[in-house]
Every structure is written in C-alpha cells, then in structure tokens.
Image 1 (tube, helix red, strand yellow):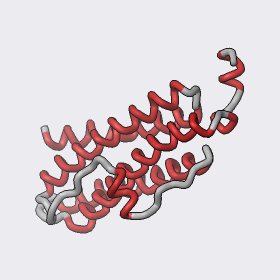
Image 2 (cartoon, rainbow, N blue to C red; image 1 turned 180 degrees about the horizontal axis):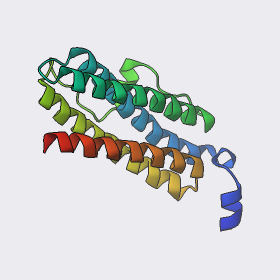
Image 3 (cartoon, rainbow, N blue to C red; image 1 turned 120 degrees about the horizontal axis):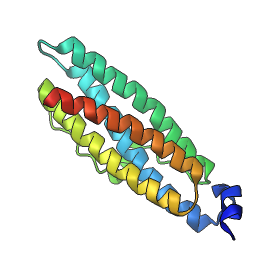
Length: 162
C-alpha cells in the first residue's frame, strides 16, 4: 500500500493485529488516566490547610478534565474494535501510577500529582509512537490533545513547587 493509500484508509481498515497493538497501549493510557482521575478526586475531597480552597478548586478542575479524557480514550479503544478495560482490578493491573498511602499534605499532593502527570505523559508518548507508526491519525490527534493538557498541568504544578 502506498503512503497516500495508507493515509486515505482509516485504522478501522487495518488488520486486527495492527489495531490491537494500538489498543494495548491505549488501555495502559486509560488505566493511568483513570488512576490520576481517582487521585485528583481524592485530593480534591481530602485536602486541608490554609490554602485549602485553591487546592480544592485546582484538583476539581483536574478530575473534571480527566473524566472527559477517560471517556475519550475508552471510546477510541471501542472504535478500533476492542473492549475497554473498565474495572478497578483491570486498571490496577495496567497502571504505572502508584497511589499514595493515607492523605498527604497539600504540597505533597502537588508533588504526587506532578509525578502522576509525568507517568501519563510517558504512556501517551508510547501510544503516539505506535499510532504514528501505523498511520492512525485519529489516535495521534487524541493523544496529542492529551499531551497538551498534561504538559500544561505539569508546568502549573511544577510552578507551585518552585
């Protein structure tokens, strides 16, 4: 197949094995994103201290954005022909993010969140590489949008930590 024919086809037209390679990486991205969503919700609910309101609102913004992202990633997995993982067990087996023990102090929450966003970025880059190798422009677009979000949040979290 020449390059133009590849670009004019969609990933849906590709063999199962090709789509599965992308799906496997998307599943890990979904698990990391969902774990970060839960962590952000936990921090939103349980933060306390003098800057409570600022952190409370920030983590709320994060979990709301991540809830949308989880849906988009899961729907992409479905669109390319696979079942999206959707249980805590599956997510805990797939994620690269370690959840904190107990309730950290606010600045520790920020450090943990920054580290988790870095992990999501690493996984997104893996998806991007595989999707690009297989000319899956829709997944490339989705992951590029995810990277834009996570890099911006990471910059903001690192600014708080500076």
